Amino acid sequence: MAVAIVLSGCTFGTPDETATTPAVKLAVALEAFAADAATHGAPAVVFHVRNGDQEELMATGVRDMESNTMAVPTDKTWIIGAGTPMVAVSVMKLVETGSVRLDDPVSAHLPEFTAIFPAWDRVTVRDLLGSTSGLPDYFPPLIESASLDELQTRVLTFEERLRIAAGVDLPPGPVTFFAWSATDWEVLGWLLERRHNRGLDEVLAKDVFGPAGMGNTHLAAAGQPPEPMLHGYVLEGGNRRDFTRVDAIAGSADSGVISTVEDLSRFVAALTTGRLIRAETWKSMIEADPFSLGGIGPRDDICPCARHVVVSGGGGPYSVQSVSSLDGHQQVSVATVLPPRELNVTDAPPLVPEMEDAIQQTASSMC
Image (cartoon, rainbow, N blue to C red; front, side, top):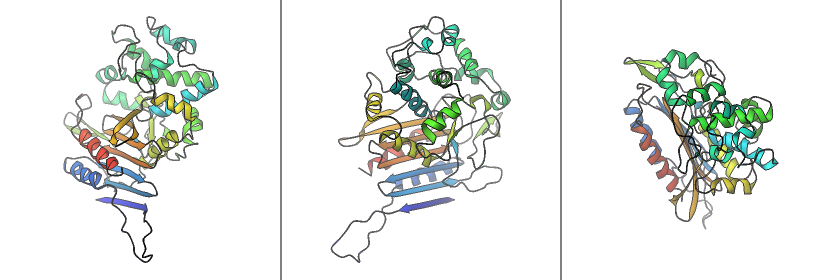
């Protein structure tokens, strides 16, 4: 089952003013992906596509597998990892004011960091934003050591997440290669709370969610996320289990943002068009060498002579990706609730590359 909303269509003037131009279908590849995902057991696919003044919002599948309530395009979802550029915006706003410098050692703003990682004193704010800190990722050992019950009901602090990571034996960083680690973002979240003397939820609401018009986005608190929410599921001993509540990532700077595909598009458009940070700050993020800053991937292979940016997230039963042109006029944002499987399986679900391919096809069709 599908629900689609076409918000507006583009037409172009012709000599015959009475002639009409049918609205162009924006999301043929995504509709095909959604249909295939459903046949492979995905509970829901939700997407937002925009090409100038023409937009399409669509949802397929169900909001939850208990009531079988139809999913709608405005349902919220965990955007695990795709919220890190939002954290980066708040950090870069501190850089703009001069209260934080990119090459500051982390310990200059968060002394607890070197108390937990005493050999990592050379790691800078830039290393965290550019994924070159080399810090161990706290998430794999957390998944390995905690039961599903603990993951769903145990609330973790930033310090506790860092201490989990510190139990992994890695040589001290920084490193010269790109090495994604959720721990980088937990450090940055803790740093933001320290610099602002307020919770990360308030910081992001003021710096990002409000200015970008993201009215359906928030940093998760402990407990069942507020409905309407796309429910995700995992397998436990072969049995399906609702895994929508995950207190272990509530308040997390890496994984804790809950949003909608439309709000995710709003964020990227606001970021790329200078409504959140200065144009020169944004340029410094995507042109940073050797790697871009802020969990954002520049792409030059989607349209000829045009740059796009990609924001991705995923983990457990969710996968999210947003692709946007630099002017914010062409956007594709998709959230897929993946077929239930064991949580500790490390290989990427087959639907994820298929989703990414459909997103690229859709973005390329708007060139």
